[in-house]
Length: 284
Length: 317
Image 1 (cartoon, one colour):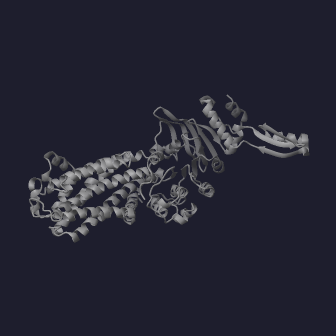
Image 2 (tube, rainbow over the protein chains, first blue to last red):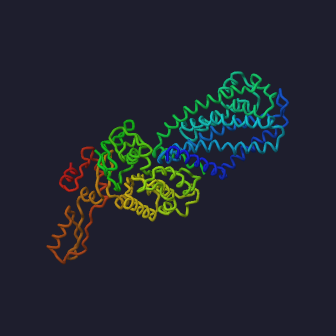
Image 3 (cartoon, rainbow over the protein chains, first blue to last red):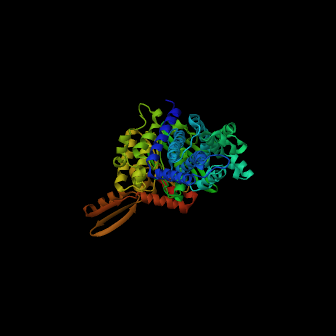
């Protein structure tokens, strides 16, 4: 039995257990409920707003963008909070104390955070199809596009969450270093409005980060090709989307393990004890 | 060269944080199957020492071998042979004890050997630490003492050859404490587990440990069994008796000889005889005080099991 492969298998089942526990937890159910209710309400109240330059209504246009943003948000903020919190409560140290435990822990995190996308996307997508018409214009090929955008987007953004979670000094700082920049990016990445309404330099900044490209990729999956007219350069820029997201994925896959390893090395009982002085129990 | 039955060997261990010297030349050995307690006042460096041995913390200087390897470079195979119970864990709040034990136990599966089957059976383990009632409740609902017992269970799930316990009984009620002591005896007697634990509780140290190390001022100031420590450091025993209605008290290093003389002189007139040897607590307080007031030179480092004169010489400046 190869201990490393074995630890990865243990980690996969760990992630699965975490997912089941999350789905059963009233705290997490509330989170899904509130997020999805908020987004659906926004779309519902603006269901008759037309998007300039197209013959689409706002829900059709914004829904795919929101899904893209949600993936980015979920897999950045999710692991960032988990890591920061589980560093403080001793989960990481516990994993360090068992053979190949860190490998299992990280596998578990990746599994859980990725699998977690299914319920969070479903909680928006499914009710949307009951509430709004004309969401998916492209049928099967659209769903396939969505699939690769989700997978590539996941690879591009999940490591960022791990890097933030490893670097932040404490759970409270995840807001400052994770939540705040992400919300800012969501504001300038053409999620709720078209990119046209933004200043030129803001557009440039937005296009550096994966969120814009994930939203764009999702729109290309859901919307008719004519709708590409309102995009920058008037096309879906599929190649560029793949390129930028892949670059981020490579960056993350190189940097995240280094940062994670350095952080894990610093874990000790006294570090956990020190964190305990500062914070109470976070998760219930 | 490390002996075949030496599990832990520490030589001239030093640890400095900035300008603060926490460990200032610590030396000790732990042999296979021994239960050793590290005693010392708060801030003496007990946790630092144990964390260095666990491989969770680097050191400034010194030579260390734990299970034949330097813990700073201990790999995962080495890790599988150790068990760790740290001070403050409040992790995995959503898991149940049974689920968590099953999960963490699986990491040890590749390390199972015929004489040390790993991991331990979870049901047996839950019973061993007395968590049957809470086994399927969320961990967040466990009381402090129950959580501590879970920590101990996790520490021994991989049937470690060497177990580190940092303040294991903090928050235990007297009965839980007694059960924990039985558990430690069981691990050491039947499974040949070597155990290093820290505690504040002198009574516990006396009850559990084959050997006690007192850490004060960054050094080991005493090393011996509770009995040896009490005899050799605090030295004198107190003899109380009454003779013809009058009460007497006398302090002497040789209580047995003194009492023999008493009986030779007064025979049946001696009543209410009471001999009280210095307790571990007396010893401990004496040593820590000497360390605190006496400075480095007067620290009682030599601890000779047979030669009292030497030990006394070292005590007196």
